Length: 170
Image (spheres, rainbow, N blue to C red):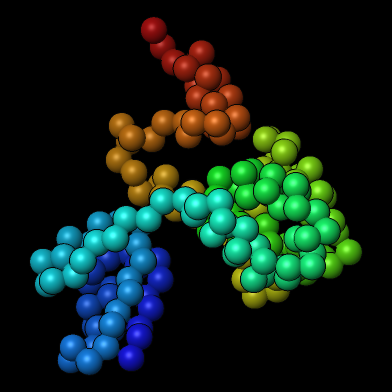
């Protein structure tokens, strides 16, 4: 049996859901280190961005090979603009999948505008919102104050930090 527990906040949240025997495998994803699980024998696997090929394959699976074959350069550019991060790629692909008439170039144009990038990486429906901004915001809010500084390459964050610095007493 395989159990996947995604985006766990703490070991205490996950522990009651773990199987009582070694007959299964549990995969827990988290933004946090979950040291208590490590103390119980769990192993850590740190993940970074996908490789270029894996990122393109993710888009193929979500959008179909024909759609990507029609705009191969745009598919590569989309992967680059999403930083090869699975969440960003999945949100962008979900938006494209629900808009079959949109060419990939439309999403690439939206993502190319740096000040609108986080807004473009939002997939909403009646019951659920899936946004990169929400994922970043959750992680940011849980950082200790000294670690809360503008994210590199995030223009709105950088502008806000510069503005705050100008207003700070010297």
